[in-house]
Length: 198
Image (cartoon, rainbow, N blue to C red; front, side):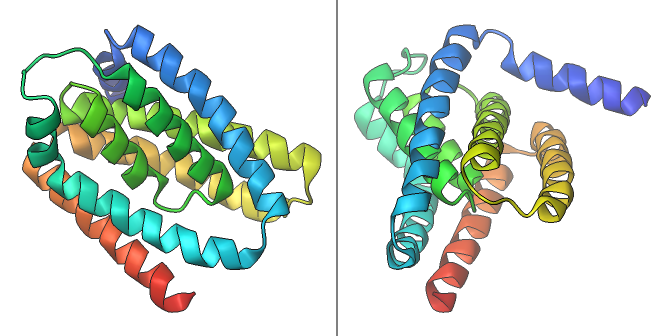
C-alpha cells in the first residue's frame, strides 16, 4: 500500500504545473472521443480496416522522428506549447480513441511530444490522464447508445487502469531513450499486426 501511495504521489507530481494544458486537452478529448464513437456506429467496417493500421504506423514513425521534427519546427528550448496545433492534434487523437482505441497511447504521446514542450515523463503522465478521459467518454457513450458486452468491459476496464498505472511507474524510472524505443516498437508491432490481419 505504501508503494501505491508513493506512485500516486509521483503521478500527481508529474502532472503538477500542467493545469492549463490538462483543462484544454481534456476538453477537446471529450469532444473528440464523442465524435469517434459516433463515427464507429455509422461508418462501414472497411473504413476501420483501412484507416486504423495506417494511423498507428504513422504515429509510431512520427514519435520515432519527434526529436528531429521538433528541432525543425520549434528549435527554441522551453518554448510555449503550440496550442494551435496541439489541441487539434489531441482532438484527432481522441476521435481515433473513440473510434478504435488500440495503441491510442502511441498516438497521444506522439502528438503531445511534438507540440507540447515538456519532458517525456510529464507528457506520459498527461497521456495517461487523457486516455482515462477518452475511455470514460466511450464507456458512457456506448452504454447509452449501443449494445455493450459488459463481461468484456468488466475485464478490460480494470486491466486497462492497472496497465496505465504500471506503465506510468515504469516510465518514471526509465531513460527517455529507452521509453521512446519501447513506445515505437510497441506501436510498430501493433500497426503491422493490424495491417496483416485486416
